[in-house]
Image (cartoon, rainbow, N blue to C red; front, side, top):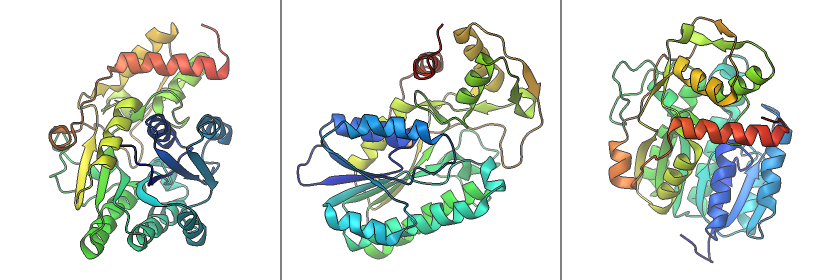
Length: 324
């Protein structure tokens, strides 16, 4: 994938997926331009620690900027020959959208429009962007297929991600911009987000605090390890097409109580469980139909859940200085 005459722009490069993607692209010898606003949605020190690893690469340039700031983006594009974009910058989280809806409007819609406009102006070769499994809403059909209708989001976050897919389709059609949307399914692994289940549960169990178990444990999630997600994302960056949507998931859903049990076994600790009802905007089950992703991207997730949990916990202990 290396091309000396191209820079790959990764927005949200200090985020969980953005960090891992940037690092893999850099390891492959690509020139990466990273953008992140380092907002305080979760621990900024974690974002800065990820960023410090990326800054050690000579082929990495970083700008603390917000994709909502069109002028700042213009200056970045003027200074680099950006030919491919992976837009991962977004206000994340289903539950947070109930508390701060306008941050989703600004980042996920206005910010993405800025990215599309610059992709049009600079005639980028490929635009890949993060969508989400949340666009499927309360789809009763399992597994979720990209052929399914996704017109009934049950959270504002999901609505903005569906909006991204529609906006990308319009720009692809009008301006012949290759656009690929990736619907990520419950990504986990080292350097993960503190608001995600694996981090929350590990942190609470080690601190002898109770964990919140929603829908009384009657949940299934298609947990997908970060390395598999990065592999699929790079395959999409390498493959410019007029317009496409792919599911990137493990296609092997696991019950929430089983997931917690695996964490308990790896930690050697029992969790105190606080059983609670399903939260607004949440769904009982997610499972990805990845047949199209296998066929067209060669996407093939390989990491078993227990192995992925083990790697996360090993990272967590090292990062926070916690002995076994």
